Structures are given as structure tokens and as C-alpha cells.
Length: 282
Image (cartoon, rainbow, N blue to C red):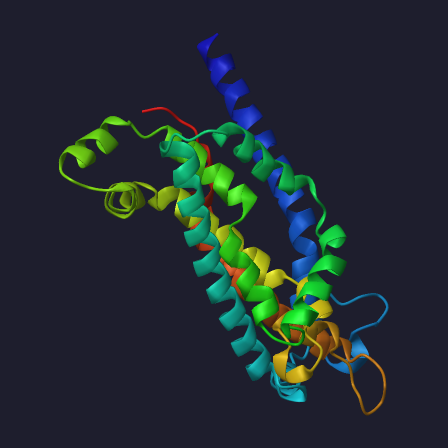
């Protein structure tokens, strides 16, 4: 009987792993095909039957793709916008969340509901009012249009951080007040060190959103000296022959994708852990 249970458990584990491997292969195949195509010679890209592995490999596609446009500048612009977006968005969201979680003032719950309600407004609806506002401010074709709005916090981050703070004992605040700390000192001396897991989650989310953002730069950035990497990838084409060079297109798409993939791969435990501990009570 024990033997049968052991065999059944091994069988279930084997079936489960085979199923997971099959599903993973389905999801990973587009990425594999992109990398494979990026290394193929021109005649092999649309060969029939399709070639899964490039033979011979043309690594030069990556160099030619990178040099075809000013991708060095696009990368610098993307890093600049992503870095400031992370700093402003996470810092402002943490401050607002602290107010909702630890301070008592009239209308606190109503204001928090209003903040949450802003998550239901589609970004497309906000585009025209923002464009008009940025035009009057002179921020069209400037990175300020993508950076400054992050100073006003992110409703999703505010919710995450506020729920995390609600799980931290209030006795810490009382002890800090007895030691003479004001609200701001309680925030950065007591709360910030305890918020590392959820702040790490917010940083990862904001990095992925800013790095992969295409809609915002497409609307607000007009000249190539202000472009981000996503616009460079979208505009990638052979301007001489007026056609897309697919192996170079896939090469630059691989470069563009590899950084978010590495960030997610090395930080997925922190990402999942930060969300899992949000709202838990100590």
C-alpha cells in the first residue's frame, strides 16, 4: 500500500513537471525565435522549412543594428527617465502612504478611496489634458513630461505601501514620539528601514513600466535626440532601402529585452515576497 502511494506521488510529480516544462516552452518559444532570427543570415530568415538554429551565426547583426541609429543616446535617455521616475514615484508614494497609514485627520478614508479610484481612469483618457497642460508649460519634446508627473505618487504604490505599513505595530510610533521624534523623523528613521521589501517591489515595478513605456514617449517626445529605446526599436528600419531588416530588428529587440528580463529574473523573489507580505499583521 505504501509502495503504491509512493509510486502515485512520483507519477503525479512527473506529470506536473512535464506539464510545467511544456507550458514554459510555449511561452519561451517567441523569445527563442527572436534570438535565433537575430543571428541568422538574410536568406535563412524566411527559409522553408524554417530553421530553428542559425547556421552560420551572424553576430555582426548586433553591431550593425546598434550602429544603424543612435542607440547609445536612446539608452542614456531611457536610463535617465527610468532612474528619475523610480526615485520620484517611490519616494512620493511612500510619503503619501505614511500619511494615510499613520496619521489621523478628517476625511482620511474618503481621500484614500479617491486615490484608489484614480487607478480606474485609463491612461488614454488623460492624454489630451496632459498634452495641453505640458504644451503650456513648454514640456513637449522634453523629458520633464515623463519625469515630473511621477512626483505626485502612484496610486498602486500608495495602496501597497499603506497596506504594508498597517501591519507595523503602532507602538513603534509611540516609542519614537517619547524619544522626541516628529512625524517626518518617524517616517525616515523608523518606517523606511522596515519598508525595504515593499519599496523594492515598487522599484522593480516602476523600472519595468518606465523601461517598457512606449505610449508616453511616442506622444510627448518628437525629435530623435529625446527618443527612448522603445521609440528607436519601433522606428527601426532600413532607411536606404525602405524595408525592415528582420535579423537586425530582432537583434536590437533582443538587446532591448534582455535588461528587463535580467532584472525580473534576479529580483522575482523580492517582487513576490514584497507583495505577499503586504497587509500581513505582525
